[in-house]
Image (cartoon, rainbow, N blue to C red; front, side, top):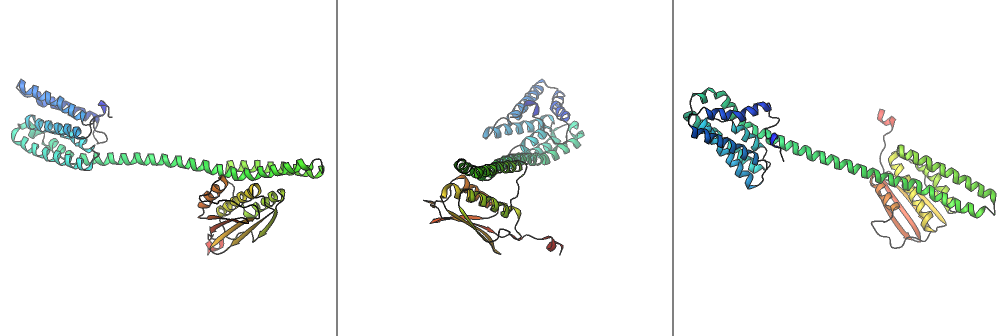
Length: 378
């Protein structure tokens, strides 16, 4: 809702004091009339005009068009009876605020036609004062023609800018939500493996402490080192997400499988060729999560990792000989599997699970040609 002191047009190129003068001028045109009846009629029409003009900003629907019609009728009467044409400028600004396209063009046509018609009538009915202000009358007519489009386009632009601001705020909120989800996934993938390893080694050390103290001492040292590594990775994660090489991740995979007393075998080379660090980081995180699931849930005795790189795609397959997964359904459930799917979406990858005797997790990522520095120079 507009305040009473904001009814004057904004951003029209005219100072607000000029609009105040336009509000006072009709009294001059009226009081120069000799008859008391004419003065009373004129003053009444002025107040009625500003009341109806004000109500055009407060009402909607047919009531809005009613008050606009009343204001136009008063403007016509003021022009014909007293030679005051400048109310048309207020109406031009008001018509420009109409948001409905059909309503805008209808009121615009009515205003322009009535203004031109009444100005022509006034030239035959008014005295020399009206002719002496002909340049100002001409400017007013031009303003009536141009000002509504200026106000209409400005209001439309402001509305679009408001919608753009709302969209940008929404995007910012979505970015924050996505960043939180990413941090949650990274913490789950980074700390989950390390904590599982610490738990396994703690259990093993507890069993060995009375049987083989030296081995138990060695396991405790490994726990200490693993905890330090986890702390280091968390610090790096908070500062910036660290890219992980598949070769480096395989070293940690061997450690956790050895601690769980699960045999490990590798087929293929983890040294990927011309693979972006983002893709390799996603594969490393998925491998970490897959092996963590094998240790936690499979009850397997052996786990194998197959890495195959072709010209079209990268294939990472993690297989165990455990109890398998019953009632596999899609979409997958569990933070680990959902996190892997979300990560693979960033690199257009896919994931499938096969479970009969044991479980196989197959990850496919399209190959991306990475330009080398030498190729770039050529």
